[in-house]
Amino acid sequence: MSGMFSTRVIALMPVAIAINIVLGAIVQQYLKLPIYLDSIGTILVGVLAGPIPGAITGVLSNLIWQYAPVIGGGTIGPFAITAGVIGLLAGLWGWLGVYRPRPASGTQLLLSALVGAALVILVVLPIINNPAYTNPDIGGYPDWVYTAAIAIAAIAAVVVAAFIYVRRDLAGLWVAGAGIITGIIAAFVSAPIAAIAFGGVTGSGTDLLVAALRQGGADVLSASLGQGLFSDPIDKTITSFVVFIVLAGVSVRVLARFPLGERLTGGRSA
Amino acid sequence: MEDALNEAASRVPDYVLRPVDGTYRRLNPTTKLVIAFSAALVAFGVRGWTGPLVVLAIVVATAAVTRIGRAMRPFVLATIPLIASILLVNTFLYPGAEDVLLRVGPFAATGTGLTEALQASLRVVAFALSVAVFSLTTPTDDLLVDLERRGVGRRGVFVIGSAIRTIPRMVERAGEIVEAQRARGLDTEGSPLRRIRGILPLAGPMILGAVTDVEERTVALEARAFSAPAQRTVIRPIPDSPAQRAVRWSAGLGAAGLVALGIAGILRFP
Image 1: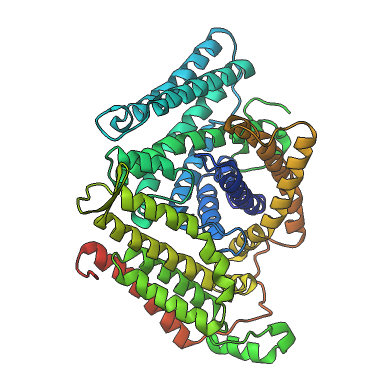
Image 2: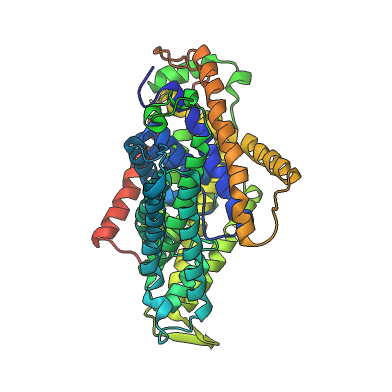
C-alpha cells in the first residue's frame, strides 16, 4: 500500500509520538528551561511523510500525553491544535525540500552564514524592544534581563552562522528560517489557547516570563503571546536543527522509502 | 447492530470477555470517552463558576461511585504546580484590576485577579479529575477495540495503541542512552548551557534508533497482513445500548451547544 499512510508511515507515527512525549517529559522535569522540545517527532513525521501525517502525529501526541495514564501531562491537551499546525508546517517544509542538504562553498557560503546570523538578530530584535523590557516607567524590570536577551541573541546568531559555514551547507539557513517561522506561527496559535484555558500560565518555567510581561503592563493575551514569541521560535528552531542533523545521518536507502524521502535526499548517493 | 453485538457477547465465555464490575465501568468505552471530552469542553468553555463546579460535582460523584478516590490522588497532586502558578500570577499580576486587597512589597493582590485565579484553578482541577476518571475506569484495550469497531480503522488503532506501549520502552532507551553518553564524558549536571548541549547526544541516538527501527516494524506488520483489505473479526465485542447512544449524543451536543451559546453571549452563568 503506498501513499501518505503507507505501512511504513503507520509504523513511524507511534514511535514519533513516543519520542515527543518522552523528550517533552524529560525536558519538562529535568531541564527547567523555557523550551518544550515536544515536537521533534511531529516535525520528523511531517518532513518524512507530509503535512497530514505530521498534523495527526502532533494532535495524537498531545491527546495521548494528556489522557493516557503514563506520564500524565498536566496541561498539554488543549495545545493539540498547536501541535497539529506544527505538523502541517513541517509537511510543507518537507515538501519544499527545506531539509535537503545543499553543499556550497566560497562567497555563497559566507554570504549565507551572514544572512543566517542577520535573520536570527532580526527576529529577536522586535521581541527585545518590547516596551515591557525597555521602558523604565513600566514595572521594576531589572537591566540584566535586557543584556541577557541580547547575549542570547548574539550567541544564537553565531551558532547558526557557524553551523552553516563549518558544514559547508546552505540548508542550515533554510532550516533556521523554517524553524523561526514555525515558532512564530505556533506562538500565535498557542497564546489564545493558554489565555482562554489557563489564564495565560501553564505551570512550566515559562510562567516567570509571563509574570514579568504582565508586571510590565501587558494584558493576559499579550503576555501569553510575548512569552510564546520568546520560547516558541527558539524551541522550534532547535527542534528543526535536531531533526535536520539526525536526518542527515540516516542512509539514503532508508530515507528514500518514505513518501517525501526523495525531497530529502536530493543529489546524495549514499 | 447492538443486538448482534450483545448476542455475540453473550456467547463468548467469561474468561475471554473479562467483564468488569461496577455500573460505570461496564459502560461502553466510547460512552466514557464522550463523557470525558464533554466534561473537558464544559469545564473550559463555559465561563464563570457554574461550568467547572458542575463538572467537578459530576466527576467527584462518579469517582465516589466507582471507588477510585484514592487512585485519583496522583492526578490531583500533579496539578498543584500549575494551580500555584495560576493563583500567584493572576492574583498579583492581573492587568487592569483596581480593587486592591492587600499589598506585598511592589505587588498588589486584586479582587478581580483572585476571582479569575480561583475560576481558572477550578477549571484545571475539573479538567484533570475528568481525565483521571476516564483513565482509571477505561482499559486502553477496550477503548481501542471499540474505536476500531466504530470505524477508526486498524491503522488508527494501531498508532494509538502502539504509541502508548512504546512510551515505557522509549523511557528505558533514553536512560540507556544517557548512561552510555555519560560513560563517554557527557556532562548532565551544571549550567543551562551545558544542559542544552546535552540534548543532541540524547535526542540524536534516540531518533536515529527509532527511524531505523521503523524498517523492522514495517516488515513485521506486513508479514502479519496489516494492510490486507479484509475487515477483522472482533473476538471481544463490547456491548452497547440505545440508552448509551442517547447519552453520548446528548452529552456531546449539549456540551458543544452550551459553549456555543456562551460564546454568542446568549446564555451566561454566574
